[in-house]
Length: 151
Image (cartoon, rainbow, N blue to C red):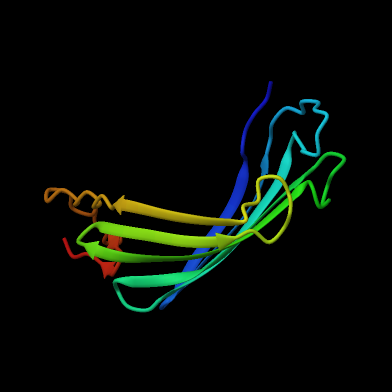
């Protein structure tokens, strides 16, 4: 039995705008069932954007899509579409609370009528470079998120 979720993702940001997109497969066995479900491999996709209102607050939409690759490709029963409206707030240094609500946009199996999600994240700080590491002669100084770091 082969099961997996290979996917390609891209993301970026420009000033206050953040965005991401993904395309992938949910590879799983095709089990026969006498039902209106679509077991087997699915094509999955997602597209999202967010706006950073302040250093603490961000929000935006995310559209997710999945459809069966078997006989029910792009059919009503074999396709799930959902629109998530999400936000996040930094509540303390390194602590983020996320929240979202989502209506289902299709009748496919697994699509909710409505969904609510809440999450708490702790962001681990990157390790500081050791003080004894010096760039070799002629090499560029190391970079951090704000620009060159002077040794």
